[in-house]
Length: 322
Image (tube, rainbow, N blue to C red; front, side, top):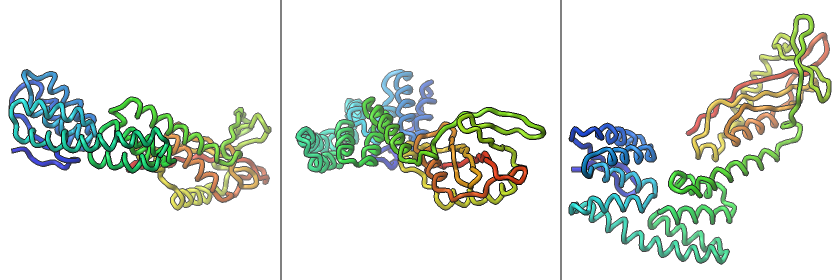
């Protein structure tokens, strides 16, 4: 008896007891399926089928369940058909339920939605495409729903739909990544000019200290903490500011982007922030770091020889994907 696993409609795990060499792929596929890593599970079940001798019905059944979760309706139904060939009653019932009744209704709604989309009736198209996806999701209706959402300026809806079929459709993958980068660059341009302004510098050593000279202005930047008696206070202010105001970008969360982003900026003699740089990272995370810096209240400047100076401040910010 197959064991029920949480899935979009159904998902069963059935571990084969034979001793064929393909069993290791099958077992790995089961583990990935339990962990929710459906794309990897699909690949492992495919390897199990390709490496096995004869027809591995268990691998076909599990792969069909995984593909249902990935909204690959055609792949799901193809795998279920293999099981139908041996008169598997459960497979026959599932085929009737998932591959005939729902698909016919979903396809009708999809075609009507496509007509409205071509007429540029995007609101009406959205309703029909939503109905189609709710009846039964497949690549074409999810793809069109996402593109239509973009027409309605629903960026999050677009991202969600493109992500849902990211690995199943090259067009969706390209749309997702291109628009993701475009929006990130657009957001970057909304930041204050003094925050993102770049500069070039040269390092000099004089007596017992090392500093930088900004080529464009000739200003001297001090790097050593010993010249900044307010360092600990500034660090505490910065940490408090980040803790209270950091927002993990929804777009970054959708693709699981996270990690540590290093930020470097200059505290000018009047305490204002200039010349912000970040390490390579997801563009939305970089934008969030720039936003945090742009909203940072003025800090106390560094002092050297009883005169307020420029000081380079750097600190890591960690984003945890959810």
